[in-house]
Image (cartoon, rainbow, N blue to C red; front, side, top):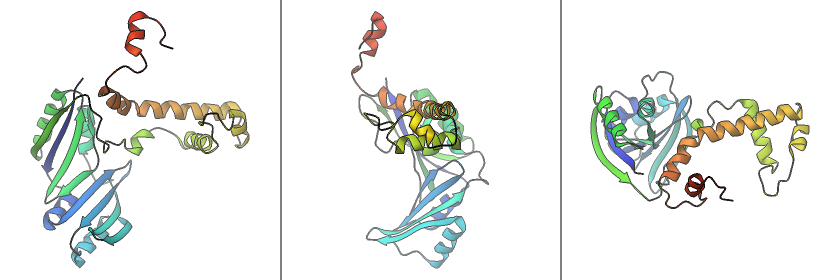
Length: 244
């Protein structure tokens, strides 16, 4: 099976793209979370007062530092006013977004990975309707590891996991429930909470099931390019016998 890694850049109305156009020495990296963006702004030059004012207006400054590579500012910005997210379009066309988005010299740079080349072509045609777009590269990936930068967004992994389920999972992890051998039991874990064992176990199992379901697309992505059949799954299915 082949995967298709596609990189392209687009130009449309976006405050970060516009900043990168006015300040061509800037590189802006953008990560999407469930209800906000985390923006890293890097500049080899000392930022002007005008640029610092714009950064302050983007959102809450989380971190600032200066080193040999330049000035680094990390901000958090609300997504509430942004509509028609391009990330949602990627999902509509079965393309996995590879963060971060990079804004440089007036362009937004994106990379996606798809299982079907036709999905990539359809996505690019859709984006051409309301954005200037330039295809930078399209590469078939076969029998090799997915790039290490292809990280699963945290908010997608924990989508639909409730606070109680997260709390149950966190307690189990911290108490050594998932270690081999286990350092605790469900009974011991439940005794540390204010709920019955059956209730705690229900929260924990639901959290586990949701995490595995949410991680499924990334598991499929990783295993699609691996060679061999380490568990003997194909042989087992063909013979109807266990591969234990």
